[in-house]
Length: 146
Image (cartoon, rainbow, N blue to C red; front, side):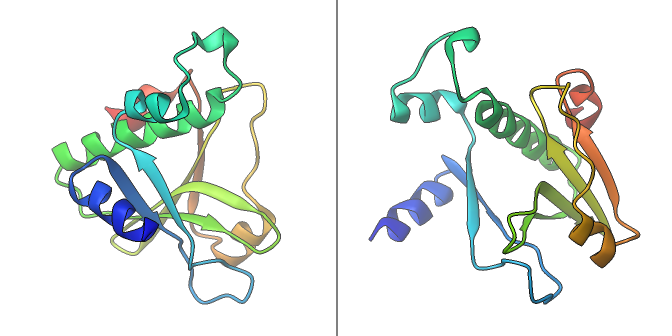
């Protein structure tokens, strides 16, 4: 029943569904779906939290959702045919956003706190050595969304 409502929300552009990425490696999770709101205001209303940023404990999730919604607008404007995914393993290694364009993989990690810049997960590097990897922060996000 919940899946029907979530599907309806995707059809009316309230949420965007992103499937898991895998090339059939044993440790990759593909049956999960991540969902992002096109508008953080709707997200905030559902969780009843309109606090200013310094009073919030979910800034990382807000940042990720905002960057995804802006990237979707950018890709639509550019008429990109990129396939969009997230990547996760059973051992909890994760990449927030993966774009596949013309067979080339581009991985992105979204971090609100620029002091915590991660490296790509070892399993990702081993499985996809030719893929690019970039961390998107408040300091460099404009190139990603414009």
